[in-house]
Image 1 (tube, rainbow over the protein chains, first blue to last red):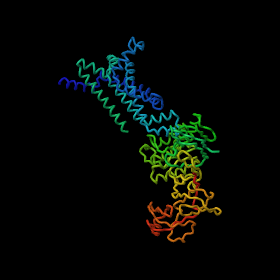
Image 2: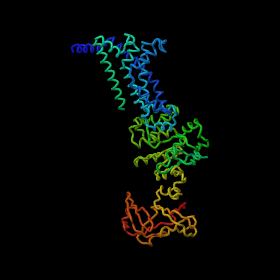
Image 3: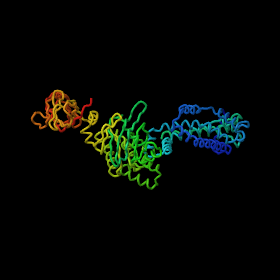
Image 4: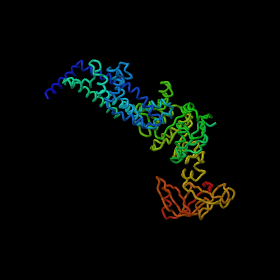
Length: 228
Length: 360
């Protein structure tokens, strides 16, 4: 018990003194997850719009399929990306395994279903007459899609934040394809996992507190957005 | 040449014929009102004219050019029109941005946009709400935003679908003033759907009656309201006395029609032996207590079977061998003691009657 209490005090010290190692790990975590979220957003918004605004056979099935991948285990994505980028894998020649780049790619694969699914439902949540209103005021097809996206902006933003939350808090994928290399691919979650198994609770608790703070900020932001 | 012309326009949804061979011509600068009961197809017709949906068959001409097929032409022509949908939806942004949206889509210059939006804000009386989120407005205000948003793009044709449905009387008169203002000031061609007939009468140059997907009659408001060409239209425009009879005698224009046990004298062109409907507007019937105090040709003794107060008026039902319904002021109802069971003389002029041939 004493050990945990001491660890907690030390952790607070780490945070308040802006310990370089802690800050470095947190910075990398944010960088990787923000990058993967932004890239996934750039891909998902046009694709969601295409799916939403077009009628095609199998549309409902496709949406169900996307939703199925909301809760795909991170280790499954990890395994997939690992085999893809391992020496013998199809993308082995890129030499990207155990780099931040492949972590970004892995996180994108992980959160793209969430972003797609939630953006599609955000678009479906927009009053259908908005489309007619826009067209009747002379909007082109593209302008109409932008107008609908604009109406759904808060729900789309919520989807992006959800995606970011999942990206920054997962551990399985980051360990498998990042390798938890100190000063290179070590992020908050992988550091916690390693330091705890080493018995070094102070650093783990400090990083844990920061991760929870990040989660708290995300949730506060989500709440604000959803109540607009 | 008509600005808009539809030729044999049909719209089917599955097994259901929404519109059947609509042939309509609307002239430039005209205010044309479509009246008809809910579900008659008014909204569908407006949507087809605005090119929001494609017809099952038939053609639409805009300014003499067939625009039914070409996608590019349809988009260009749609940009010359504006449609205010029945349910006013506003974009989740300020009143100003809502109104400016159509101009932005047309890539107008910022200064132009500002000038036009500000001027229309004054006209619709929404200047104080300029920066408010449009979602916080009341129904009447949102409708004014919708009309302003459509008008600001200076369309050649303004389509309005039930612009005053579900609004309070004050908002209704504001919207009607606004529509007249637009028609007179900008010379915009307006096509408006309404089920509120007095509104059609107040605003329209011409009225088209749409029922069950068919245009049954087109004409000036007076023609539609006083000489409807079918029983259905007569019922719809509020002619509540519709009696079935046979033409039995003619003296020049004056004819005698047998209705139940009595005879009614009217002006009509139909031939002797024709079965006709006799239409009498309730407000054309007057009541007297003595038979000789009226100069009208048709005087019937009857017994009052029902009275219903409607505001400052009273609706009186009388049985004269055939039922008659009339409207009198509350005051004259009291003076004449028009109560259930009382006997009165109901009279109406031969010229107040409109006849329609009964098609068997």
